[in-house]
Structure formats: C-alpha cells, structure tokens
Image (cartoon, rainbow, N blue to C red; front, side, top):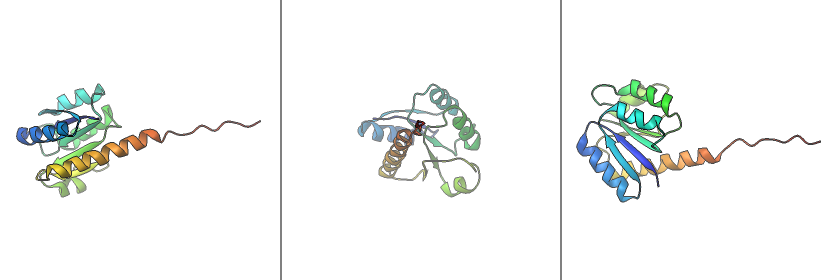
Length: 135
C-alpha cells in the first residue's frame, strides 16, 4: 500500500487518522512539526502527505511552497478549520489532492486518500511515448 505522513499539531486527530490508514493497510506516521515532514518528504519517504494548514508556526503557504520544492510529485491533502479560506487565499497556485475541514469524518479522509493515490499512480503510468524515425 502507500506510505502516508500526517503533519498536524492536533495530536488526537493525527493519531485517529494514522490508525484509520493503518487499518486500511497503509504505512502511516504523524509529526507535529513542518520541518520533520519536509525532511521526510525530501528523503522520498512518503507517497502522500496530509498537512494541517492552520497549524501554529511554519504552516500555511510557506509550508506548501517548501513541500512543492522538495517533493513536487507527492500528493497533498490539506486540513483546515475553514477550508474555504485555503481555496481563496493563502495558497494561490498550489495544487491539492483535496482540501478537507478538520471536522471531516474519517471515511471522507480515507476516500480523499484513495482518490489522491489513484491519481498519482495514473500520472506515473502516463509517461510520454517516444516516436521513432521511420526510414
């Protein structure tokens, strides 16, 4: 299955999501600090990252920009208390696999994970074909 990182300062939520992912057969871990997530992403340890964008400290757009630099192909699911703000303001230009409210049910989170991983696999399969010269 997939290797998933949950980066959020809400330890209760992160523990709940890790348990749900592991129950589905994924490898999952949680961290509370963005720099831990960035180090793991740069090392290629994750297939998907869920990131709390309303965390205290180095979160929001700065974290997303840094993540896009170190792991541009890793899908990101954003978690936020008010997801509408994320859609309009702080992360213009960022692409998220999903933006979910913190109050989302675990089944909605797992559905977003499955969709993001399927999309990432499909992108990997779509490699450009080379044309050979005839003659």
